[in-house]
Length: 163
Image 1 (tube, rainbow, N blue to C red):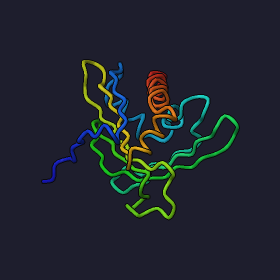
Image 2: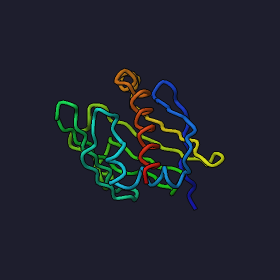
Image 3: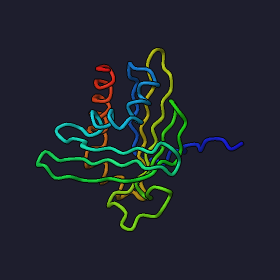
């Protein structure tokens, strides 16, 4: 039996957000895997996530459409690579659904890993963005990775507490 892929830190290429939140892993999982939930929190305000499509299986679609405060829409498509319910979710924007190479890869292609670990009654939440080179990592960091992903996590917690 194959074991799950292990994440090996590579600080020159990776950005990491780690925090303990006061909701259980099962609810964090739901927020990450239910398209109706994704549209409530995924993009830091004042941006919005206006559409989401999820086919939750390795090779399945993870597609979002974000809208800027000025009303411009930006579609993002990728595929899931690894899924361990309530523990680990890995997807990439470097390839599309079915593991097919994208005709035109996004300018900032990445692989994202979400790790969930029970911590008391809450969750140790780790989000990791893997980049192909230092230039992409630095660009993503300059775009506000820590602030944006942190704000989105705050929105996730608030959305889950409303259900």
